[in-house]
Length: 184
Picture (tube, rainbow, N blue to C red):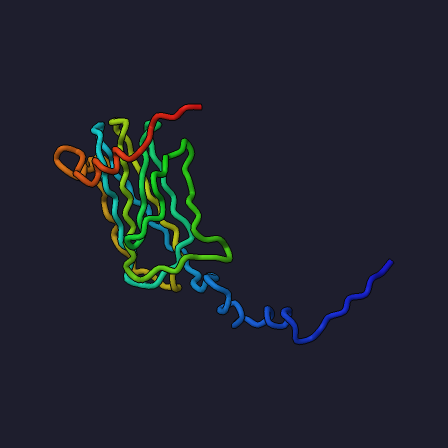
């Protein structure tokens, strides 16, 4: 048993064979070296809104995913996440398993400007202590970093709430806008 294949020259297959065509595909990864960063904050057993902020290096990068993990969270705890002052996650409740918030895939990435700003605001409604981690998975131009001494982190330092009372005016408005009573 056999079959016959007809190939029409000059069609889309010829176009895909050229490496330059990949550059024409919208948001196809152009950078090849992984660059991953993880940040952590300790939240005290005080109700309030706690900020975690990070600025990417001064080079163009491509964002693959974000990872948010939280220990000891309450059912009504949640967070909001901004990238370059655009809200990407609104009233996002933590889950029991580390959650990968995929922005890109193997064939799609989100292009970031140099020194892009990531801001996570964690709302501690349960007033329990916890740790929150934000991981950022990126691609960058292939480079060799100099051998550096690693930064020694104080992993026991507690985050400060947005205001001395634990909740500022904007934060209080945000806290009051969330519905935590659900009926099934």
